[in-house]
Length: 272
Image (cartoon, rainbow, N blue to C red; front, side, top):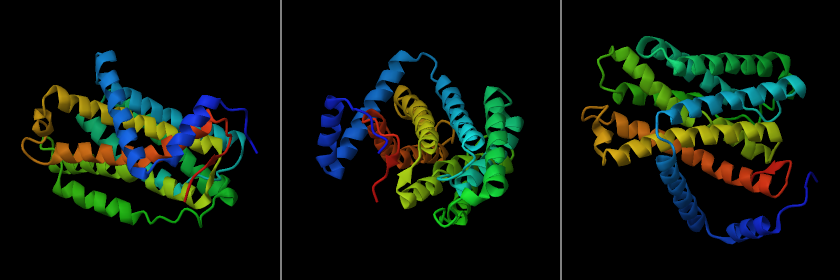
């Protein structure tokens, strides 16, 4: 069902990958990711563009959801809790951004925040009959409260007021786990329709670019950049770890997404 003629070589490749152990798959994923990071390091001159691209891809993912909600009139497969966590950290980040930066990042964050609020409104009220609440069973406070506590303990050591430093750190930590309810819901549902899959894949690509930026900065500074922003504290290593955690969380889904697209499957199936 929903399958087109695939490319034999691709089928052989994924068939071989499917037979490998989880350790081999993880090793290959890490190797290919590092290879891609190295390629980006030599092909993109201004590495700060990675962050702009990351935020633009995230915004594009939200617009995919808007298309789904307006054209298909259903929110099936979407996690309301992931959207609520996303709206929370974007609201906090906007306050920090207006105070600390006020640039292209602020504009992209504002667009994504407004779009996320609209998605939440549609799921909660307009399309609530198609929302699978029983599958969206991750408790938000298990993610938000630890992020807030960690933000109070480890945050950037800048000239800004303490509250803004904590808020910025909270955004980084909560963003790293915001996609977890969505992934959990997809695992519960077993089947993922295309537009939801496109959205989550966009999140994966966005986080990979952001993570690539930090890894390149660490490499070019020979590790000294790890302690530059935090002035000896643990802020930057923790921020980098948060990026790596979210990228790792999304990597498994991205593998199955690419596999599904290359094999011509219209509906993505997630393993238990």
